[in-house]
Image 1 (cartoon, one colour):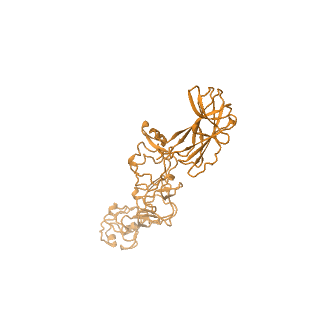
Image 2: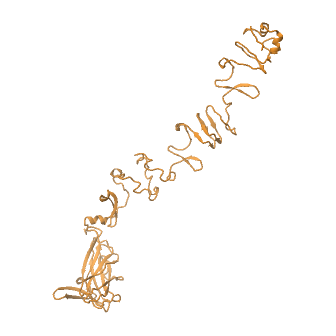
Length: 458
């Protein structure tokens, strides 16, 4: 190695050669000097070149096949560049200052794969973009205006929710998926929430009140059949504090009937809600609304006048034991009798339930077929209105003479157009073609059960 000494920082190239302790020929061999002034290019061909002190290189210096040892980085000055820039090569030996990572790429035209890249400032994406790393972290602003951005890596960290912005939508709208990966802004309907996904444990106490539900937002059409039952409502969840006065507006006023239902708390079953009919409630108070009885004795009946008349008869049972007026129906032909009843104002104009009370002198268990028809007449209606076909009821005689017999009940539909306070005409008959009692059937009277729908006739 050739050592160069005694050279001052202000010496010219000629002076530098003069002060060298080497001969000019040796220096020429060392440096390959082609001129004698400092403005000439110098090509060093030595294996090692050591320069001590401050050195300023202002021209073009080609150090080939030479090891150049530079001072510590703090003592090395290379002019040019901007703060934060780095030295880069063009691959042909030329070094220049450039921003970290190279020039800012234009993603409107860039295609292919960009791996392990860090982008300064705001990253703008204006076309379809795929991020496929295992972890993709955005620590700056990322603006995507293209058709699709696909993240196929295992994890994407978007940062705090306040730093994530997705344009579009309306205040309060949630992000929804179509099941194929496409998200859009929308509203939540009952199909967006899986059955059982939201229960009372998912909703904080008092989180939903009537201020959170729009008027008419939930009606019968919005609730599936059976969606809300007693298992969905906690015990004591609905009390007087949760209901308002006049909480059932807009309903038609109707007259309550005996078979209508009422809801009540069952004191014998932990006040659980139960249902009963109006009649059941009225029965507790021995209400006059319900079924009542009219007794129509045979003595108040009138036998047919011209044809097939039953016989009104005064009979004595035993010797001075009991006497009664009966209407006797013979065994050889169908006989008839009649009576009328002015029905009360409280009658519901429904069907009448009737029973025949009768006896016979025989001791054979034979049958009698009784029949009854009824017509209802209002003001200014004619008495000659024809009866319909009778409703019949068969009954069997006792084997003991003069036993009182009470037939099973039979429902009789009143003909014409029955109404409260109508006059109801009855036709009573014995149909001998349907019985086998070989003697007179003595009718003592008929029990008529009618139903009321008001408590009084006022």
